[in-house]
Length: 160
Ligand code: COA
Image (cartoon, rainbow, N blue to C red; front, side, top):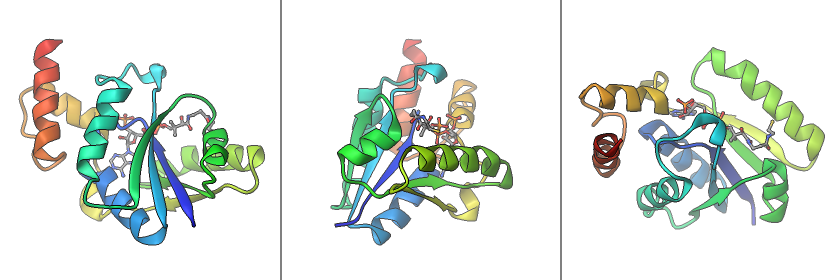
């Protein structure tokens, strides 16, 4: 049973993340999308809200689950017997940060391998902040996130 974690803040999940999840689900027996609470980023959605959105978005993949974690990523990987950490690599500027994280995580746990996966080219420009910024100015985010997530962003921004 090969298990991979796909960690991130996912505030919110975008089509770019979903693209990576689909690729990972084809390669591993089990993929756990791992939601970091990440107070450093002051997320728009609570970790539980992000988890709910991810569960809804991945329900067609039977081998994909979602869990919240708060702590050291490699420890969570060991707890779940995961041997791989999936990270998306969109553009070359992502590489330096991802390389540093991969080295730190390898130093902490030799047995956990980082795998960098490229999403489809049409998602290379996407990140969660851009989606929130466009939505906050009333822009159309239908091509960035699934419709039910677009709706939740709209409601959340009105509540703020
Ligand atoms: N499609 C669209 N956007 C993508 C993407 C993709 N395929 N891949 C990355 N992104 C975006 C994210 O939406 C995010 O956007 P934002 O900055 O606007 O929110 C950004 O790229 C990268 O963020 P994310 O993937 O959420 O990673 P992160 O850098 O916020 O989180 C953790 C990294 C949580 C995995 C890392 O901090 C961690 O492991 N923390 C736990 C503590 C620990 O173990 N630390 C040691 C690790 S070295």
